[in-house]
Length: 527
Image 1 (cartoon, rainbow, N blue to C red):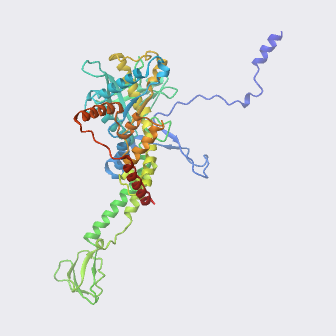
Image 2: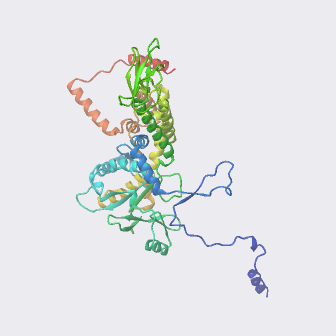
Image 3: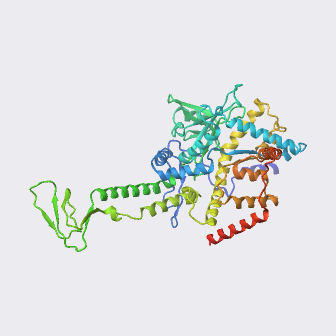
């Protein structure tokens, strides 16, 4: 009896059931409408008073940003300078596996040999045109173009093909897909099929319920839509989508130029208006510079009709604004000049305005104005500080680009290299240890040194104190290889000794004294 009463008590509704929120059916995302993001509320505005959402039309923004890039010089400088300073002709791989977690029995010499072998194989594949499906560029040039597309369009898509051919260094081949190839709106059977699989489509990308992309819908040349899964059945990657934007939950990327479109429009309008005003001043607007005694008379004929009466102008420095005015006669000492010759324009500070707006754009991207213009007109200390700040910004951008794209490409390439080209990596067959091979570092072109001698001495002190290594210093200096340099240098020194032409260095004390004098002069100039 006690058990039955307890069972009945569990069936009774709780007294606090009314406090529990009622379960509502989860709404599917609105697929036909543009992606919505929550708007940032202004100070003093509560959410119940203003707008909750802001619509973002990715297609419209893509068109506007491309027009700004191809038609505005400042937009091109903003994009191209970042590409040249961050990626330029491609980032260089440094392969640093965590050998302590892979194989503790492998000695250091064998580890170095394996790292060099992988880096040489990678360089051979990345330098060949066969790495791209079209064969029109190598992977180093592709990095430059893809990063430019990422900043200009906000995203890029890459398809990974495998072509098993004995003539290829590696079966992995890359195909770059235009951003426009993914339609922003899909309907009909595609949406119904995705819903039947328990997924949803947003701006041409199919997501599962966890928000992970599972397939991409590409438009082919015959205008047909083709669905390509993100991963192959065996786990290999088929599609890579890299995007940028200030909105984390956005399915498509947003160009870096979106936030600067109003600024670029202001610069364009200001420059066009100033140019138009300067042309009008040079062609139409004019004034008569009077003589020294200012007692002159000028005959002015309006138009070209000979029947018109002559008009005498006693105040020769003032000319009526009448179309077709022709100055027929001026007194001695007078001169007819356009306004532009006297630097009298509608706005004389257009340069300051353009520079201030451009500087705001560059600084918002983390790039000093001197770096963007490639013009160092400040002191040594100030220029060095600007380059140091830009180096921090560049490291962040490189890490972001490497984690989203370069590391993924290398992981797929390494998998094909092990399987297809019989690259021997101890421990790679273990999926848990495979991640320890992905400790990668990507090096850009070194930033030019303002004072190479000072930088060399500073690097020498760092190496002597064990803070850095010769290999890293060589890579940071000119992206070279320290092992190769030492081998070549040893061979050169031996040959110079045999020929008896070994150059003698200057006395150390004299060199140090000259260096101290130079440092003192530079410090005085900085002050």
